[in-house]
Image (tube, rainbow, N blue to C red; front, side, top):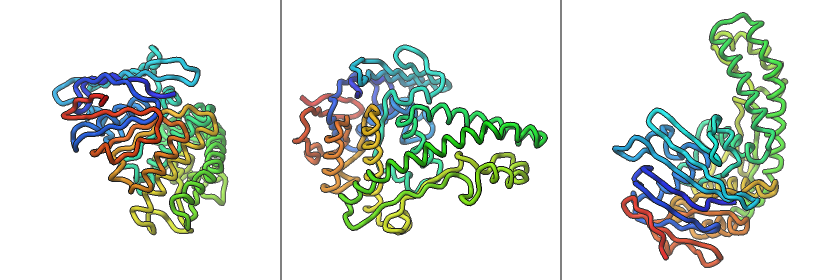
Length: 359
């Protein structure tokens, strides 16, 4: 499975582009501000319907235009090609999968999994818990088919419970949602714990290759005190919930931390070590996807040569090649990226928003 082609219209500084990609390595070169990252952003948007550069999706519309349009053609594991189409107007978003409109963006999950490593990827470590929950939920949408349904059930019950709290409804109406909330939360918690149990061996293996004298562990916080059940936590927080108008405890408040040799990565590790931890975490996720026979999608590496030294660059590219991943790498100097081991590879050059394949 991979992205076979992409048509772009009015996305960032790219007016139009019609591109055919390699199922292996795709190297995108060009000067700073030429449009390399914009091309990666368009690919990312096709898989996640959002940008990795901004929370305001309309900022990706080319200056002076009213909308951007992306049409990608993805090859499934079964060998069938299907299109994904996205049109973002100033006040409206349309998403189509295989010719059918998508009403819930979670319905797109699994169609084209995409991961990115960029200068902003450090938010996994030093951003708020919301970023880590998004990372975890996105992974589980692809690895566990049943996760999406229980996540939607939980989100619906949580919205209703919070609405009752904000409206200052009687306690009985607030707690009427607790049975559904607790049942869905139980499954979400089990899925997440199982995911981390499966992920950790891959994570430790990757770290051993890049930082041989270090041990990396995951610590998961479920979203309520560990010494009580969620039902007990909800009971204990009733007065606070009523006073503040929202539910204090539950999987929506979960978090996880990465600990290197017993110490927090953010507080005790150098920037270089933090990058290695992030790389290890992302490669471990890809390896777990492959173990679970999840379609691999694409792995995006923005400005690889400035983010990692040569040794770590080679480890990342070697691991992704061995996993048969489709990879998109941007770099100012194309000669800085070793393409020799890739049987299938293409080069693209970007200049002032114009993208051309280098033959």
